[in-house]
Length: 424
Image (cartoon, rainbow, N blue to C red; front, side):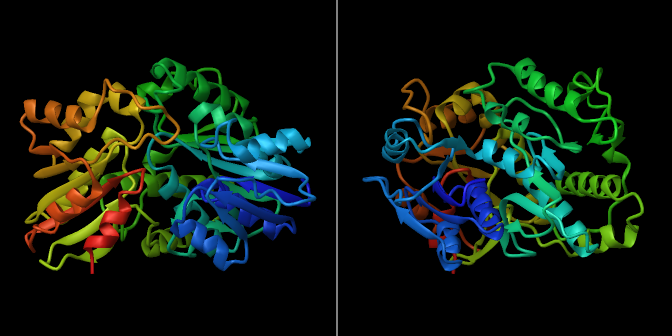
């Protein structure tokens, strides 16, 4: 890897972890992002030079490599500058595959639960003094970062399936938490998504293993020709957790199974003690405080119908006497359109749901789908769901909730800012 690296989109959760890893390995790293964020603030506090905004190129003289986030298009001014200057470019996952290719890699994949499972696994191995290097898709409270520095020959990596990114990795141990259609702007159907998982599963070597639920029919279909042993994580027993919900207990089972697969002699007391103390991560049912009227405020990254439904159900299990209020920020026109009915059903599980305008992210606007359409579809099914034109309107509406309510801001965009604004 080059010694002087510039990262376009450095504030992305994966990119920021990679930036910390490269600095840990002695590289000179700087970068840019389009806006301020808690992750950008974290990097700046660590001494990383981050330019905010993309009005002009900030690539310094002497840069040997540009690493870009997949959220940054070819038309980006800094990527254009790199091409004009002959500076090599690689994507985030290409870079991650390069730095981890010679290490023993545990890749945690799946539609739901990747971040929590990766955080749990890293915490277990850290507690067991195995010194893992970990790249995680959120800031883990247990070590205050999305990066855990450790040995160069043991990597724990959250692996995303989007655009076949996980195929850039070479895992010895592959964890598949679950498989459900998502990223519909890339995968036209579930079969296409299964093909990606099948490819990576069949690459796992015989001396490695695949940690998954082999009795899930969607997963079973991709395992028919694998050469690696298969470990059923659902048989693991786990202690009482600080995190709520059966889905987090399943994440804990997957993390425990992966840890014991990597280190067969790892004592159960290490795994269970680490799981019992695991505090969770940023934007995973994270408590943010109370409103002036006394409503509890939580924030969650859920941006898929299944994740929304599981989070609402877990909140109701934990707080059975509370009115559950969800403020949802849809992420991507394509996902919202493809899973419209599923989103409507999931939001209808709340006592009241507010829907913000769709967060376009990497996409161009699509007038055939909107937050109003989501709300209308939910109401037709009996849901108490309203669409709003701005965060300001949502904030004012949420401030009407009293101590009988539990508010959850949800989504992959910046809806978390509303939670910050309404909580003490």
